Length: 174
Image (cartoon, rainbow, N blue to C red):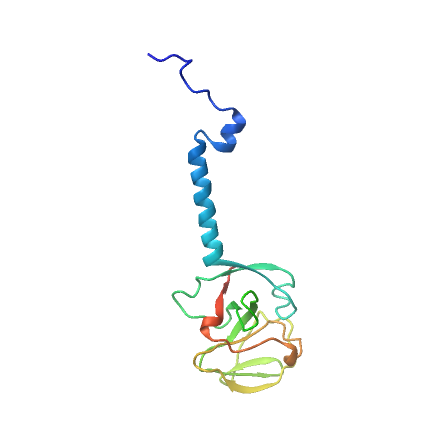
């Protein structure tokens, strides 16, 4: 028959809160949690910092947002999606842009209005509309047409382009 002297001392209240009743089990849980967070951060979610005025006022300069890298695993990007694009500027530089033209479409701007295949497209997210003029140009079948929301900037000063699908890193989360 055991006595109370044989029992292990009960951990203090602070130790119990910090490490639980079984510190080894708590350590294993912490290691697993850190590994899961590392995998999610490395392969699923990508934090990015918006720099520059091209997405104003929808997304503010110096704001941090999160990109979901798995968003296009089961479907292709759609018009209106805000995506992170890795242009040839470098591995760690990504652009935050909105998809306005899909593969095979013709994109034009007249008095700041977007036209797809000759039809005006409503863009409620564009609050700063300038007077862009750009002749109709086809989007190649393997590319998307992307541009920022701040159309008040001069067309020539705006970063825009036609990235291939593999350069689209993912979709803006929330």
